Length: 163
Image (tube, rainbow, N blue to C red; front, side, top):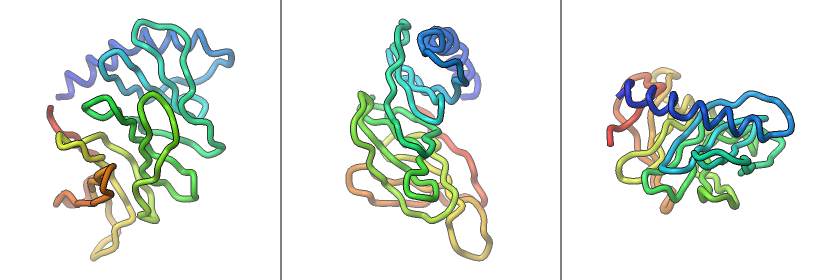
C-alpha cells in the first residue's frame, strides 16, 4: 500500500509543479489527493484543483481559516477535508468541482481527515474522544446521513482502507 501511495505522489509532483508555475504568488504546494484526472492540493491555507494534464489551478476554498488534509471520495463526487472554520478542527465535505462546504463533525478537539472507507464514509482521526485516556480515535462519518462510527483501535492517529 505504501508503494502505491508513494507512486501516486511521485506521479503528482510534475502536475503540482506545473500548477505552482500558474499561481501568481509562490508558495508551498502540499497534501496532494489524486482521483482519475483531478489533483487537489493545499496551498496558501486553501484547497486547489488542477487537471493532471496541467494548466491553471482553481481555488476551491477561500476562508480566512485553514483547510487541510484533502481526500477525494472513491466515486470522485466529494472532497473531504479538515477545516477550522468555526474554531476547532472539524471534518467538512464539498462537491469535488467546488461549492459550499458542509461540516460533518463537532468533536470539539483536534481532527484530521484520513480518507474514505470503501462504503463512501469519511475516515478521520480525532483527539476529542472522552474516556479512560485522552487518546486519538479513528472514526467514520457518512456525508449523507451524518451517521458516525468508531474503529475499535487503541490510540490510532492514521488509517486507510485498501481498495
